[in-house]
Length: 75
Image 1 (cartoon, rainbow, N blue to C red):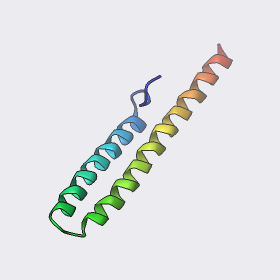
Image 2: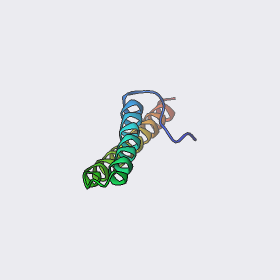
Image 3: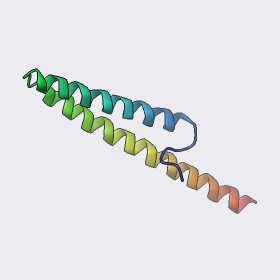
């Protein structure tokens, strides 16, 4: 079973949230290396975006399970 759901809007949203998470972690590292406390904001953004990614992955998996159950019940 794949980590990401099948193609669709939830997969795209999960991938974009994951990309934002990775970029914000990189920005936080750069900010802390330069001695700026703005990195704290980037860390918070990374946390929010990672939660969004998990939410969209779980939501898409739940929808695919429901569609499979409907197809099994109808067939």
